[in-house]
Image (tube, rainbow, N blue to C red):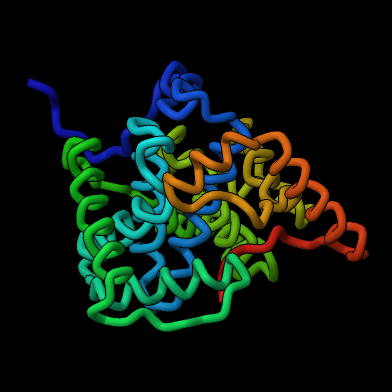
Length: 284
């Protein structure tokens, strides 16, 4: 009989290297972009619905875990994103209404596609299709993850570590470290490392940027994968990424042409800005 553990489920190297989507011939770069897009929508929807950060973070971790046991070719980022946020809101004891969640996602999708905002008809076909997709997505997440929806987050650990290091009153380190925790949700960091490692990594990264030397007695051990978080600020998502399975199938048929179109669009944006700053999110 296997032991019950309160630690997060961590992926093996083989699971990270060979994802179900990669087996279905989804390009690795496209998979990374779709994962990030799905997490952007979850975070944005949670903000609009005024859910606690714990619910949004839990949903993004569940979203990332799901697509290491299921393929993007079989499940869309829109549906799994809605299902993950709906499930996480219940797990974190802050449940949201299905109707509100669907309306918010419809608004975010239209905003992402630069379409005029038109509220969904409550008894309309689109609403019921999205409702069915959400319920099925929640069921599939529970099934694929074996009902293991426990997510331990590093926020509390990070605050405690800052207190030990006497950095809680620093001008920038606490805020930057908290921001890195939120931003790293859009990567696979939370399925690769335990919360204590993640908390130490963001503190180290924030301290390095602030040019604050951390104590060496006791020694501050070497931390890695901080660059993984920093990649987010240098990468901009194309505006033509697929959100449904039908769109993905069509997208893959002309993948190279669409990528060139998206890259050219990003380059035009970059050329028109003196300072790129953080990569844009779908947030309000």
